Length: 325
Image (cartoon, rainbow, N blue to C red; front, side, top):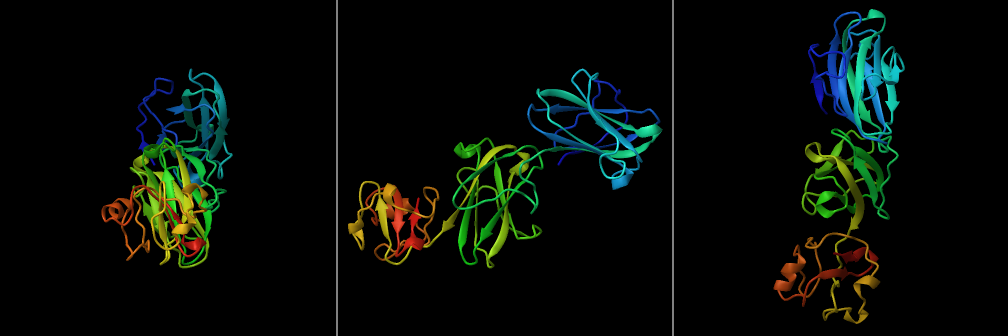
């Protein structure tokens, strides 16, 4: 989150040197009755924003009665203004521009009031960064979202079963699933206060991948954000992780290796596999021949355990033992 504290040395007009970014915070002072502080801000068409100016009512300054206005690119047309829609006499309003470009926020004190204040800008988001979020995540469908600005975090509620290992993938630009350059994942408990795990680059490229095995059944929260302040679109999905059973057999493209169950002869497309992971992922146990623990497909080929790559599936003793790569 960007916080700016400005001296009152810029003209109250479009030539102001003060710049405020969407999602940022600025702190300043109304020095004299009639003083007006201007902030230049760049807004994107059809993106909804919230603007707040806080003073003594919310403990963000000493200004008793803030007044906040939003002006158009010429600094002449007043698009929206508010005196006391926030806490106490604080100002608060929303705005969705129809055109991208430069706009101006003006901060004043009502009735000649003076003092310090804070301006906060927020991007309206479908997914709140707390347990009240409407976002939901299941194994049956991926969800798409957008990290709109620095500090934006999207939370998704998900119900997990004790003892079951889950794999969460947050993908963006590295795999072409969005424009988010550096995805970051977190998982929290039911009340959203305890961080249980996090990952910045455990997936393909610098995508995020996080595995988690809960000790209790219940509601958890997965948080999607951009590492180092990156922004953009993303795809979030979750899957189940199963260890293959002792009689597991490996399916490879174009055929089935000899061994227990080889007569099944099913193709990858016909298998109802329960886990989706990435090429080269480690299998905890494939039960092939003498058994191989923790070896990726390439290592199994090198060891002569399978005839060719890619290894595309492992069939265990039952549906809970099915894998796909």
